[in-house]
Figure 1 (tube, helix red, strand yellow):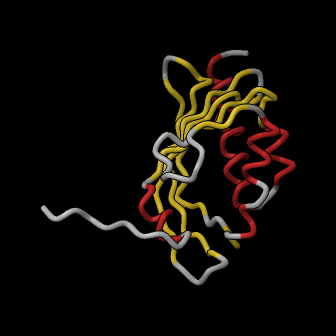
Figure 2: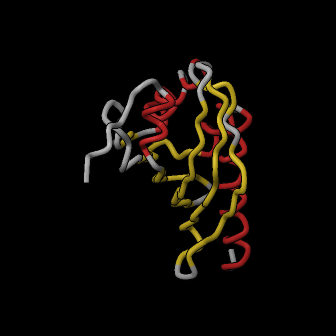
Length: 145
């Protein structure tokens, strides 16, 4: 496949995955993930996994989210690929989630996908952990400067 076609195919996969998040479409998520996918949240707060290996483990982690989150509300989605590798897809987006608990949760994300042979083999979600902690009932006490 030529580079431009591969770039377009891979950005479409990332866009489809993000839309599946908004739609709570777990079947599409599973379809897009490689069996040995690695999902990382490197700056996740305590209590959240930083790395999840394998599609079954990722799906098990994602399955209970609808118990806490009514809608994901991802928007302002921008998708790019690296010039050097069309399989490296970088997405930028925001969320305005509706939580089961009546609390506001908004965040901004940068998610880096590695896509090979039409499947997501690795993705890293970067986000500000503080709003997440607060939305799930925790608190963060800033230090005095």
